[in-house]
Amino acid sequence: MTSLRDQIRAQLADLKMPGALEAVDPVLARIDSGQISAPEAIRAVLDAQISLRNNRRLEAAMRSSRLPAVKTLADFDFSFQPSLKREQIDSLATLGFVERRENVVFLGPPGVGKTHLAIGLAIAAAQSGRRVYYGTLGELIASLEEAQAAGKLMPRMKTLTHPALLVVDEIGYLPVSRTGAMLFFQLMSRRYEHAATVLTSNKGFEEWGEIFGDEVMAAALIDRLLHHCHIVNIRGNSYRMRHHAELWGQHRLPEGDSASASSPKPKGRKTQEVTA
Ligand SMILES: Nc1ncnc2c1ncn2[C@@H]1O[C@H](COP(=O)(O)OP(=O)(O)O)[C@@H](O)[C@H]1O
Ligand SMILES: [Mg+2]
Image (cartoon, rainbow, N blue to C red; front, side, top):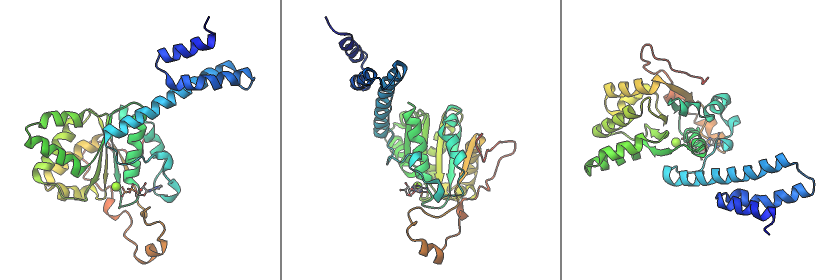
């Protein structure tokens, strides 16, 4: 007759719970030796399965989302960036903004951690089972332009509208063509109130007209973006240059200069500096 323990193993295999299956013998051994109680044992077995599932989700998300690197919020050194409110990032990390289909804009000079934080939020969302997608503004526009040239714009638009969280990184480093700007505007209009977007820029909103080559379109884009938006302004030194403190002393760049949140805020629209 199969033992009770063999039956448990067979059941876990049947339920396709390899994490729990791997954990069950050592956990049973710890019950036998009186180290843990039955509820603790159940929790340990379930924990093992949940963490395996989360790791698999993350691996799958890293492949499909095109996230360029694993940068987690846990790896972020808040003490290096005192202008950043830790509570604001912690609050964003609970992903209520994804649920509410709100946007997050990280503004600040190069190297202050905008991409790191955007990826960190995307990874948190992926770990919670949500679909995420990452691209620089240049990459996203290029993919839309290619799709349009191939007569496949609509499926591509849908692919980029679908994810619960889209990261649009590096707005402002490269100028955008007129058609590119229009395609991006269409994408953001589709995502508006439909899914959350995290954007990063080294330029303040007042310079977005220049980036997109069209003041009116940029204003309309910003209007939609800011309607439900958390703005994170990072003023500080580049983390990349942290070992060159002496250089900072000599050639200090104007801090947070290009990233003031002095946006053309449309009337009657609420923009939160600090998340609830
Ligand atoms: N506060 C920080 N703690 C840990 N790593 C950081 C921090 N800020 C930036 N980095 C790291 O420094 C590099 C530059 O940051 P990044 O997010 O690319 O800056 P930005 O997008 O603002 O130009 C990345 O490797 C990032 O992981
Ligand atoms: Mg960046």
